[in-house]
Amino acid sequence: MYSRTDTGKVSLTDAEWKKILPKDVYDIAREKGTEWAFTGKYWNTKDKGTYYCAACGNPLFVSDTKFESGCGWPSFYQPVSKTSVIYTPDNSHGMQRTEVQCGRCKAHLGHVFDDGPPPTGLRYCINSVILDFEKAQDAEKKFNEKEK
Ligand SMILES: [Zn+2]
Image (cartoon, rainbow, N blue to C red; front, top):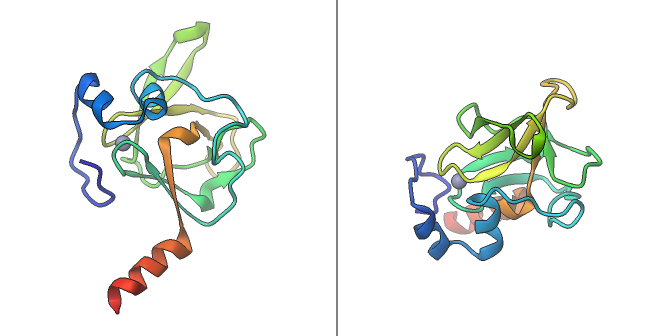
């Protein structure tokens, strides 16, 4: 099921997800939880690389589009591609927001706001818990090892 190359949609029940995912990932991905600001592992990460969905492996964001928003969560101005994420209106907690979900497995990622920097003017405010980061040089190293 977890794959960084397979783009086939993943559709599991919450009960099935519960068996697969660590509790903290499940709480965000399926229960739409939010980690505390400034506590996640990636809010201040500046390394070059790719952020994948922690539930299914779908590539979501690259470090080139990450910026310092000061909000305490990893913030990006653009997803990897138009189909990386999907959008759903979210009117919970008395706010009108747009929820961002993984385009492959529909895991809850965070929200998107329209106060981001150019070129998109968008701020994707994403929970670290639901991201898996791979540094660019790690990926290169793996590739080189495979070549040998
Ligand atoms: Zn996913």
